[in-house]
Image: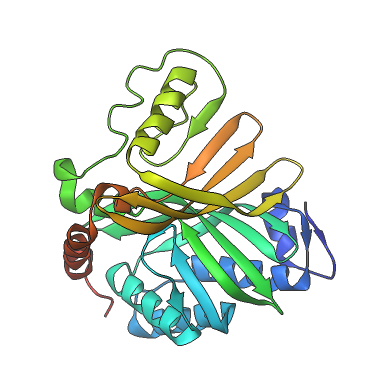
Length: 279
């Protein structure tokens, strides 16, 4: 179990899922983030309570960005409105913590997410990477593959960047997984093919190492910058997670497979038909 600089009751509940030395700021974030992930959004009142809690996680001038494409959402009020939109479409959205690693004011919060979209439960992993000051998030980034949101809507028409890359992978080696894969793969050739497919989807790659955190068993390394994909230059980032026996990649394939107009059309469909609004 992680060590706390001061008392942090949630560490007893999370146990070995937390690594690193947990400051009071990190404790406040982990506590609120975990509470937020477990909350319901099944009524307008519950949804608004959840939005208000989320707002208290961020500084008044904090920012929140996805792992690719869109500009960061700036300011607590705008972040709250962003969440209202999300919960309006996904009233069943919830997550549970998988692994949390703390490095001073930087926290990597790995979670198992789920939401009901078009009558189907969609499960997908995510990492929430934050930088803290005085117990509030000044910079937050979400690393997950938003393409999964559209699987129940697009079905066979969904563009999958890594389709077929893990079909014939019999050899044994270090295991890896990431967007587009349903289970870890051990074949080194398939690992190379996966990374080749990723690099082939972008040009003019300008990514540099950003935040990192390492515990006794788990390390997270963030890379951030810009790439060119689908005819435009976008903000982009990825996280590489390493732990005994497994490498895991976190990034968003959506802006690598769809241009801005196509993405906007997908979101229009999603926000109008993902689920019945909470009443």
